[in-house]
Image (tube, rainbow, N blue to C red; front, side, top):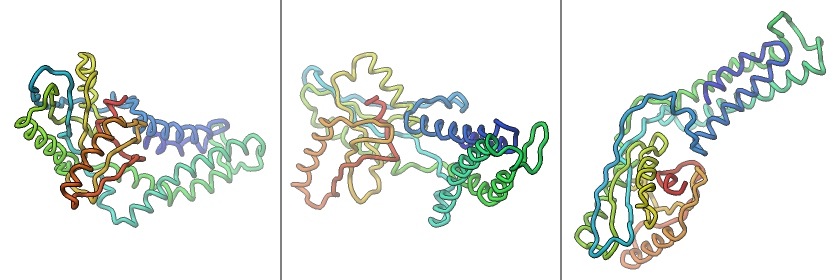
Length: 294
């Protein structure tokens, strides 16, 4: 997405009809970003290095025959810290605003030049050759780009990073909670309910670990009669949250959420000081649960 947006100004100075490609490349970049982040298409995955990751699970057998399964999982991998996280808040805000405005700026001027090349003719041209058509619009566009474009590059660099965070909150704390649940249920085995406790790999790069897990055990029918509780970011918060919908358009199971809500109310009756619980629709953010839903 950043690549398509970054090269979009190249087409602005060309002869008609090529300046429209600047807007097209920006829209293409936006579509790639949306389809990867929101729709999980995975079109760009072949361009990245491949390495091996692992999912680790333990199974607690019930008393009696297995008639149902409940899966509790966290994830083991952690993300790289984005450079933008180290920017002062006000600076980061302005980098984002001006950097994103570059895309809007390019779309507006690309369409403007394209239309005026049709209806304005030679009146807007300052320099003309076989390939280049330098116009008043280009002059205004590129002069403003002297300020705007560096912010776009700065924004792109802000989403990169080399330092891998330890992942205590996201998401080893959740894995620890899953293990604690497993320890309790190992000592208090439920009747006819098999418990799976574990931690997925490769959550931070498209929930691939959970995707592989669902593909493998879904084909075997193991997930057909089961609940999955995906635990996320359990290490630091002012409240607990039950997710109802995430940015991947995944709608979380109302039956499972209702049972979790019921369990919370029972726990709160015994311990009124526990963290508050809220219901959340995530505009930005998701977890492995989307793989089980989709």
